[in-house]
Structures are given as C-alpha cells and as structure tokens.
Length: 334
Image 1 (cartoon, rainbow, N blue to C red):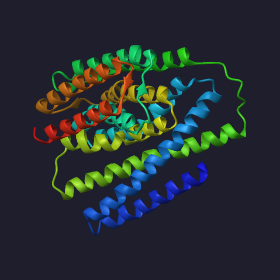
Image 2 (image 1 turned 90 degrees about the horizontal axis):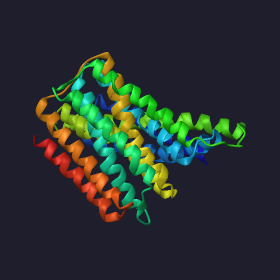
Image 3 (image 1 turned 180 degrees about the vertical axis):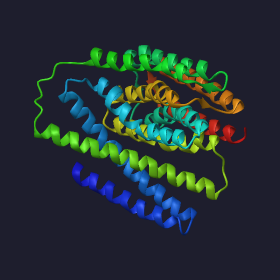
C-alpha cells in the first residue's frame, strides 16, 4: 500500500513538473493553484508515509519513538528549508535565508502545534521531558541567533558557535533515548529504508513545488523579497513539519509530535543558520529583523505558557493559528 501511495505521489509531482514547464509560456494564477493543490497532496501523503517508516526504521536500530521523532523526522522534514536556504545563499540573497529560517521556526511552532491540536480527537498531552530540557535548548538556540543578528548581520564565527551545541544536542538525544532492540535488519527493514529515502525525496520536491507555486503567484499578484521569504516561503518550507505533526496526531503519537516540532526548530536555527553562515555573512534589514526577533521571542513564550499545563486543547490550537495569521498580516504592513 505504501509503495502504491508513493508512486501516486511521484505521478502527481510529474504532472506538477510539466505544468511548471508550461507556465513559463503562459503564466496563470489558476495554473499555480493546480500546482499548489497537487504539491500539497503529495506533501501530506509523503509525510504520513515518512512518519510511519521513520518510526519503524528507528525502532529497528534501537531508537525510542521520542528519539525517532526528534532525530529522523525532525531532520528529514527540515530538508525543504535547508535546500531553500542553500539556494538563496547561492543566489546571494542572505536576507531570504534569515527570513526563511526565522519565519519557518515561527510557522512550525504556531501552525504545526496549532493544526495538530485542532486535528486531534482529544487534548494533546505534553510530557515533562519534551517541555523541559528540549525547550531549554530551543531557547538557547533563539538567544544565540538573536545575539548574533543584533547588529543586522550573522558572521561566520557567530554561526560557528552554534554548531557544537547542535552536534552535542543530536548526540545527547541519541544516547539518552537509545534502547536495545532485538529487531534484525532484514529485507523488510531494508525495503522500508529505500521507501523512506524515496519519500524524503518526495517531501523535498513537493515542498519545492509548493514554494515555487506560491512564489510565482506572489509575482503575479505583485509581492516582495525578504517578506516573501519570511511569510510565503517560510510557510511553504514548514508544510512538511505541519503535515507530519498532523499525521503523528492521527497515529496517536504525541511524543514524536513535540519532538519533531522542537527538534526541527533547533535544527533550523543551530544547524541551517549556523552552517550557511560559514559561507558568507547573513544580513537583513534592521526594521524587519527587529519585528522577527520580537515575534520569535513572543512565539516561544506563548508556546511555553500553553505547554505549561501539560495539555493543549482545540481552542488553544486555534489560538496559535490565529496568532500566526496576525503575525503575517502585520508583517505585510511593515
């Protein structure tokens, strides 16, 4: 069944590919809508398959569900923003790199947890280890990024300071959540790994097509650059996290849900921002950066407060989605 669903996703992406080639001759907002819908379909289905396979493969190698959510899923679903940021850096658009990463972290936190809570049959229970030290690492990551960007530029040595914490975080997650497994690495596991890699590729391409359709739509509607990366591109690259979070809720796997969201945010800030800054100074217009910084800190505080009671209900989830809408509206007006 997963093989059939995977091929359907690939088929949908092939249609998108030919539509994208056709749009170069005949730009149309309706064509972009079709590309967007097909890409979203592939993204959501691939995220669902990817989640199941990641948990299975992770447990086969001795990882707990929480470690699987934090490592495999979080890193895998961060691939779109990683490659989008690399592309922006190659094209000498440092403000798009910063906008994409900070905007994606805000989108992950508000939309990922918000939509997951709204899709859940009952309130989401938050375990202490998730809201404890992982949120602390997330806070340190935010502070490192904001201190580095306080003057409007993140230089290589400031980014270099982020990487040791990032690698230590990954190592600590693996060591503290590693458990002995009696599962043998047979044909079933190898097949799952192959499908996992294919669906990761589908996630990346789907995310790229979603962003492409949104960017093209924005051009047709006459929009901007750094703001575009902070809003439309950020939402586009955070869709795998949002889709995976909803998939985890449907599978009654709240542990991996919060591990995926928080882990992805840490990966985005410490891993991507830190890594890309090594190849060139990352800059952004001070006014927009100030608004993003305030929004990022506010997002952390709000999510922390909601998680404090260990339960997140549908109303709180809707509130997070509404807050992101207000964030985007205000962003456009800056």
